Each structure stands twice: as C-alpha cells, then as structure tokens.
Amino acid sequence: MSNVIKEKILLYKIYTKKDTDAYTELYDLYIKRIYRFVFFKVGSHENAEDVTSEVFLKTWQYLIGGSESVSDIKSFSGLLYRIARNSIIDFYRARANKSEVLINENTDVSDSGSWYGQLDDKIETEKIIQTIKKLKQEYQEVLTLKYVDELEIKEIAEITGKGQIAVRVTLHRALKKLKEILGKS
Image (cartoon, rainbow, N blue to C red; front, side, top):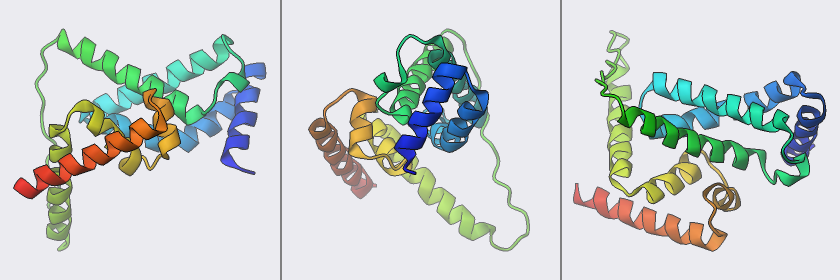
C-alpha cells in the first residue's frame, strides 16, 4: 500500500474516530523529519524538541477540530511542514521578547581512537551549515527541504505556497549562491 493511501486511511480514522493509534503511526513516520527541519532552524536540541512537540500537538488539535474534511488535506507532510514553519516563526517572535544566553555543547573526545575522523566530518558539516545560514531565509528553506528532508519539488511547493517552477528556480539560485560562497572560503 502506498504511503499516500496509508496516510489518507490514518487521517480518516483520526478525523472520524479521533483515533490516537492512527495519529501515533503518522507521528512515527514524520517525527525525525520534522525534528531535523526544526533543529536546523532553531539550532539547539532543547528548543527543537519543544517546537517539534508543539508542531505535533497543533497538528493533532487541527485534525480533531473537524474544521475541514480529510479529503481537503492534499498532503499530511505538507500540513506538518506548514505548521512547523509557523511554529518556528512563533518561537522566534517569543524569543525576541526575552534575552537568552546560548551555551555550546562540547564534543565527546573520548579515547575511542576514531574521534578525529568524526571531528573532521563534524567540522565539514558545520562549515556547510554555517554557510547555508549565511543565505537568505528563502534559500535556506528550500535547500533544507530538498536535501536534508529529501522532499520532492511538489511537496516543497505546497509547503512554501509557491509554484513548482518557482521552487525549482529558487533551488537553482540557492545552490548557485551556496557554491559561490563556498568557493570564496
């Protein structure tokens, strides 16, 4: 059974019976992807966990609210990512009103012998992430959705509210700019 059909069946169970087991199945399918998406935007595990749990709570409330039928939801992942985007915006709005001190997590450098290889990978990954963060928000988002979350252009278009051609153009420009910045450093 395809994922789309399975999602529709699970959404129907949630909509008609408020079936928590069906929602748990959807949660299990998407928790890692949504967490990764949120973490990339907020930068700390604690904040990413808080925002991610808020995303799934808001999604549950939306689904059991009965404001629209299951057939109106084109893509469950699209719905989740839209709610995640809005929750991230809410997070930053709330954070703008408070001052916060960030503490970096230390890398575990135990004497396992292979930590230096992992450190090289981590440094390279950090370099790419920092470079992506230099790009404008629109570019960051399409790059994350395409290459980190491995979504199709169609899904990205639905999440961002743009047409598929506009998403392809934005993705092309984002990659071009990323290569340009990486080439300078």
